[in-house]
Image (cartoon, rainbow, N blue to C red; front, side, top):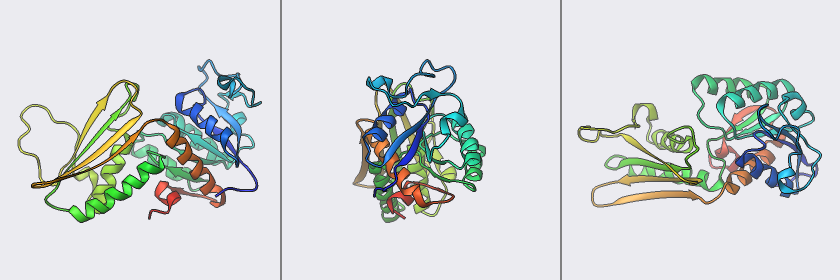
Amino acid sequence: MTFTTARRVAVAGASGRMGRMLIEAVLASTDGVLAGALDVAASPAVGADATAFLGRSSGVPVTADLRAGLAGCDVLIDFTRPEGTLAHARACAELGVQMVIGTTGFDDAGKAALAQAAEKVAIVLAPNMSVGVNVTMKLLELAARALGDGYDIEIIEAHHRHKVDAPSGTALKMGEVIAEAQGTRLAERAVYERYGHTGERPAGAIGFATVRGGDIVGDHTVLFAGTGERVEITHRSGSRAGYAQGSLRAVRWLADKPRGLFDMFDVLGLR
């Protein structure tokens, strides 16, 4: 779906790897215009043109001033860190700017703050914006319902050495989807650490294993291990391009939404 009036998009973390990927995706789109670029005050990119890394000029400077960076924008795409995203959400709610949030690692208070902001503006919040990952989530929902008791569930995720939270937000979301599909809550079943003499595996547990190293963009495997068979559902990201394209789908989908908190299942019609 495209629109006759281009959506004016701001990008947070504009000088980071994901921020630059998002800027390139907006520039390459036929219905999006780069209208704002935000970064922390300490970033050496502040004051420079947002597309200088591409050897071209956009006329959009990178700024740490939220009001200046969001002026005239329709929507902010934010893949930064919880504290930054929450500050952005407060500003967006005040200014009437929608948000597409791929930031992970929010605590309960952070999630509540985003829900409060969504009472004023429309927000898509998802730990992973990739279309493929969200289709994988739907497959996990179906598998969890069909397999049920008798299958032990383990979630294995791998990311680059710079990732600061563990397990990944995507892995946690996978666990939540599985638990909800089976009529339970992840908090009641999650096992995040194993060390020493652990005893037998608790019945019904959802185990997590985390790998960090190199430049791995993001790999997730969910193992359903039964008696005499196992089912593995895997998604691997080879680049951040899938996150950027999914984010643009969310930007388009939000165009007619006045307020509310949504996720990529809403965007993709997977409910």
